[in-house]
Image 1 (cartoon, rainbow, N blue to C red):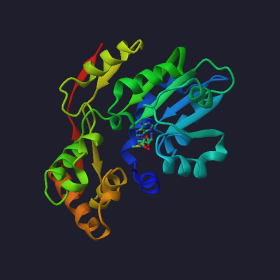
Image 2: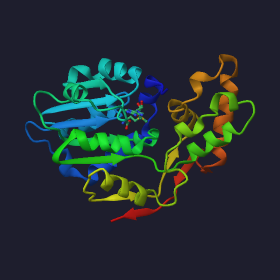
Image 3: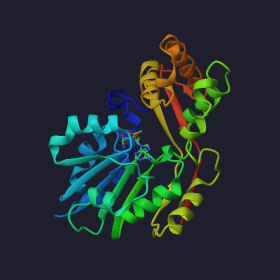
Image 4: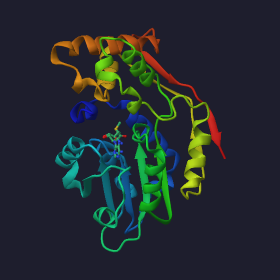
Length: 270
Ligand SMILES: C[S@@+](CC[C@H](N)C(=O)[O-])C[C@H]1O[C@@H](n2cnc3c(N)ncnc32)[C@H](O)[C@@H]1O
């Protein structure tokens, strides 16, 4: 679904946000000996290896549902004392699967991180329940993902075009489940509490990202485009151009030649 190498080379926004959020929660990065840490939706492993290592003085397990991502992560960072496993956070968490992720008789991870993954997950309640089950009592989770985004609107626009509809008609599978929700933090906060979390903070922040050039915009958007692999080779070029031109309409052009993408919802739940 995602292009592992493309994504590894074009994920400046995701890296920026993971870094910034971790800086806001420095205690989470202070690993104590024996700490078990899980990264959900690790992608090509750059954030796990580059940013999360200090959190795990014990063992860092990074999981992704996409076999190609796991393969890429293992090849690139597997020697660095990180365990990469293929695991879908929505699948049924049998005792065998739990044991595969958790060594010995460990009763759960001390910390669970997830960056830019959960907006891909329609079965939110199941994913959150699994995260809860993977945490040990008193464990902590930092979950960061998109509530809404102009890129998802672009998917919807592309799907309304007859040329692209055959390849994109299931676009809602790839749109954040909160995209049309005016109070995403309130909804998420309630769901977290329902599955047993004690929520210390749940916020949907307005934020923006400036792509420095059309090329950076193209690389970043295509690295996460879920439809690209379905498009016949002879149509790929025009599909990419159309995606980018629709995305540009939803962003503001900057005098420097870049494009700014803004995410607006502002919602905090206590
Ligand atoms: C945009 S990447 C983020 C990668 C990395 N966390 C980062 O911040 O750069 C999202 C990843 O989530 C993975 N993913 C999507 N749905 C998932 C699921 N249900 N369970 C586990 N991983 C999932 C995708 O395969 C993809 O590699």
